[in-house]
Image 1 (tube, rainbow, N blue to C red):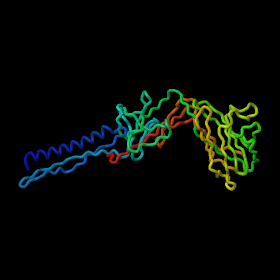
Image 2 (cartoon, rainbow, N blue to C red; image 1 turned 120 degrees about the vertical axis):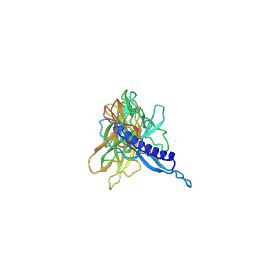
Image 3 (cartoon, helix red, strand yellow; image 1 turned 45 degrees about the vertical axis):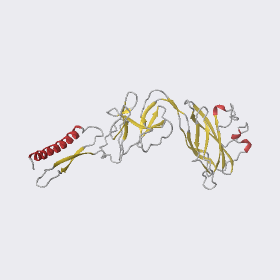
Length: 338
C-alpha cells in the first residue's frame, strides 16, 4: 500500500462521514418544512484495482437516498387550501416561467391574483371544468391550467340538468288525446301539475310548469311549459306551446318505468338545453307525491367560500347556497419517485 493510497483511504472515510453529517443536518434544519422527506447516507465499499506485487487500498463511498415516496405526517390546519396526498402521487406545480414540477407538499395559499401557490411561489395546476367534465392526460401535462380562485365579480350558471322523482297515482282517469296538455288547447286537461325554478344564461329565474297527464293504463304524458307564457286566469293555451313533451310507460306489476323514455329534454327560455331526469318516478296505488326535485344552475352571485373534496375537486359555494365544480386536482406519478 502506497502512502498516497493510505491518505486516499482516510480521505474517503472522512468524506463519507461528512456526507452522513450533512444529511443529518439537513434533516434537522427542515424538521418544520412542509412536505420535506428525510435523506440518508448509505455506505458501500470502494474497491480499487490491484496489480501483482502491489496492494491498492480501497475506501468507502456514499449514496444519498431521499425518501420521497414515504408518507409524511398529516397535520390539522384551518386553511381550506392546505392539501395532503394519501398514498402515492404528486401535486403538479409550475414555476413563473411555466416549467412543471412535482411535489407532495400541499401547503397552498392564494396570491394577489387568486392563484394557489406554495411557499416557493409555484402555482398549483389542475383541470378546469370551464368546458365540461375534464379528462386527464395520461402521458403529459397538457390540459392543466393554474388554479385561480377569485371572489371578485358575479357569476351566473344556466340550468342544464335536473331530477324529478315521486309517484303518479295508479288508476287515474285517462285524458283524451285532443285534450292533452301537449296539444296546448284551451280545453286542455291534466292529472297533476308542479312548478320548477330554472335559470337562463344571465341567471334570471325561469318558472316552468310541469304537467303529468294519464293517457291510459300505465301510460302518461309529461309536458313542460314556460309559466310566463300562460294565458292569464286560465293557464292554457301557452304562447309558443310546450317547451318539451315525453311519453312514459310504467310496468303494471312493479309500478316502475319500463319504456325507453326516462327523461324529457327542452330548452330553458333564454338559456341552455336542460335534461330533466324522470327515471325515479313510480306509478303506485297512492296519491301524487314529489320525493325530490332538483335543477342545477344559479342566479348571479359571488363566491362565498371554496371547498376541496377528497376526490380533488375544487367547489365554489355561492352566497345563495349553490355550488359549482371549478377544478379537478390530478396526482402525477413516476416509476421511481425516490
